[in-house]
Image (cartoon, rainbow over all chains, first blue to last red; front, side, top):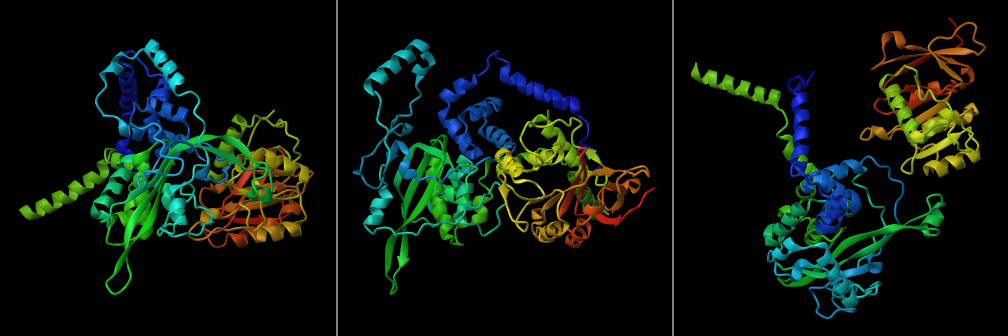
Length: 370
Length: 210
């Protein structure tokens, strides 16, 4: 009854969906999901991270279906995610065990085990490469053979020490006790304020890449009180093995991780940022101390992970004067599905509510005229 | 043979329908074969367990044998819990006092989160709209009223349930402060289910035949 005004138009809607398919296929070409998987690594990382679902194949399919729109692909993948049962919880990861592909520090040039540049666009000139127009299978094959010859079988890089641990040993950053609280799950229970850190980190890591980056940037420019320049202590990209405890084991066996099963690996980006803060020491004296911001996300998403680390520290501080310290401002606005969904709903029929507004406007106008 | 994906999905729709129209008797599955699991709980309980249980929820059982429960745990990864903690309470043919004590402490949710209230699944030999005088079983009538219940569908006969009406007073006590309360699913050997959501008023007439 309430939605009488939006009845009808069924045929027009069906035709619109057909038209959408036509626009995807009109050049008589269709992207192969394997090609998307192979050639759109960055977009797949972004979509998996924002969708909170690690599956490069399904992310590639979602990207194909969404014609490359990240917001649409994330929406599709989140919707799919909500239909599958959660069978297991993994054993917690220690990123010290990461099989490192890339690991850099902006804080020290010489770090134990060295800087590992890995794959990054940071060192390219960002000139449009017209040679890619001519790329063909034979050339790719030749190049791959050459690459294999030059960089044959690199050894896996595991147990690479953390830069932050070095600073802790030196007493330059505070030793923090482990927080062994059971993390709350924002996908199972809606958040209420104030949130705990596990909830904040989850919302930040599934935040829309652009939104997290923009707020991280705003925080640096003074809207987060960040007068002092933060430094990336360590950024690492690599793969982590995921293990689950025996689902039929008892609690003691689970706690001791006996009989755990390896179920696969995920690629993640992890960032630990050192953020200088001024601490008053009385008598007008102040001392600079370093606080730690933590960022982590699926895939290789370095900008997002760094921005996340800044927002993590901001939200931990919670200084009311700054917008990026406000939980509600940050956490309720960075989710891709929530933000794009709310903005998009504005184009849905509001015939009745708008008529009501027009009615009251007409009444006011006629009152003025008489 | 019951297919654990497609048939369970159909049965799930029937269960939803049962809750949407309290007081109606819905058959979970016309296909009453077994699932091929070494689980002696009866097809109705097994079907309901496959619909409702997974590693995210907890359950406790009364009147079922350990082997069946162990099999069910392998199938669903369910967590066993004490009655006061369990999301689902399954009552088979049991000692009434133990069952009543367990139901008495079931979760009723909180005013902020009433959905955390438990669901009790109670077995009953036969659920019918009306009992005939020729029925060999004792028959008791229950009467439901409240939202979603049509006037002519208020009354139901529970056959052979004379011994198993232990739960009614306890259920009414737990549901006295809506939206707090427990939801009840009655199931019989013919795969029929009757849902009694906490929003229903419930009364009973023992030993009544028409």
